[in-house]
Image (cartoon, rainbow over all chains, first blue to last red; front, top):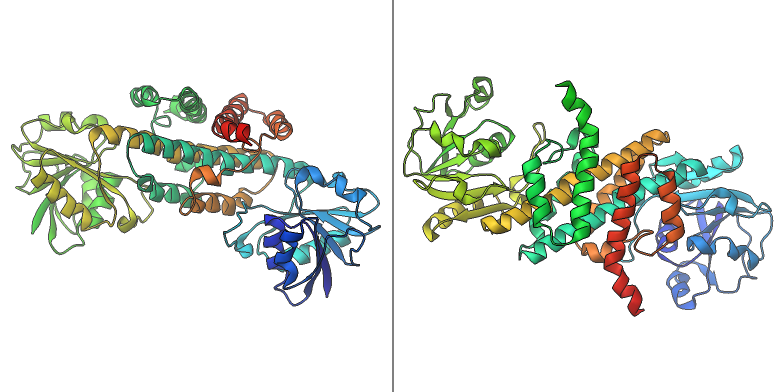
Length: 257
Length: 257
């Protein structure tokens, strides 16, 4: 039986807690956090405490708190020489104090409070300082997910950056699409199936092959008409820049043909 | 029984043909196109011809050819005073000759050769010059799709523009994510579940509510680190510009709090 303590009470902590309390060989023995109201969510299934001096003995301590609080939490918690992992995409393993065996357990997904998340298909990126700890993390991750990847701190930095492009920035393009629809009294729902198909496509073909549109086919006339239609200066700049960036990829191919 | 003739043999023509030949009250009596090899696909189920003088009598003629060929096709086809519709997102209804009853039948989706498309959930945007023709188009569209929208030529221009953002540009962000993964020896598959969840999210919450990430939380440190990591100049510009554009939305909210 692997005993787990979770530090943190936010979205990631909640989702992780719900996933980790399922397997029989895992036992989330305690959830620790300052926010008593948030702690009450976990009360039904686990011991909880807001007193950082009352942390239980466990095999793994999972820190699921805001990135910039990870460092300072160690000033307050009374544990020593433990196996401690954080869950952040953008924080290196050595942000954790050397006194502990250190690791990272980073579930790569966008967590929202009221959305059920299927952990089975959620990539978990793990990192540890030695083989034994990596094995422990691998077992922990594999017991809740079918997608476990070893990712170094260096790689994780880039992975987090790539995630900003495909998640945060993509969502902003949806927001721009939404705004254009609103301004023209078009229901945004018209675009919804296209959005789904665009993301589903890359399950089977690469983004390189999937690329279509005026920029990819060097349709200067349509590009110019589109830019004229845009009311927001930033949106015009985004249209131009993304079109140029697409054309940078397909220029060579065009020169060949 | 509504008799339909399709002009064109490309992706849109094929998908439309397969959808329209299903309902009992529709009859695609002919497919017309120059490319004999492409025509052979339709031979099994319908009459075909590459001779533009041999076009049959029909209730509706659907033009599914490249945007810039729509105008010139009327120099060669021997029909007069018919109900003629095109299928383009970016061409106005009056690009069709006045001699015909004119309309638009625009399926808003990204068509790939080897992907099955479910028309039931595909928005079809229709436009006609009078109520009777609009009714005909409505019936035609509703017989293959549950999402039929009346959209004017003016609105369609903006809709097409919005589609470029949520489809073409989003796919390019996937391509950038893919490139970052490749450069750092990370399998792109790690990002795939995040991509799916990002698009699924907006079925239930607006892009405004769904926005997360360093730009949305004004995390200057992470933004700067990310830009330094990017090797491609255009990608650095895209990161900056999209971050600024996101912050333009959330600045007001931030000032209030």
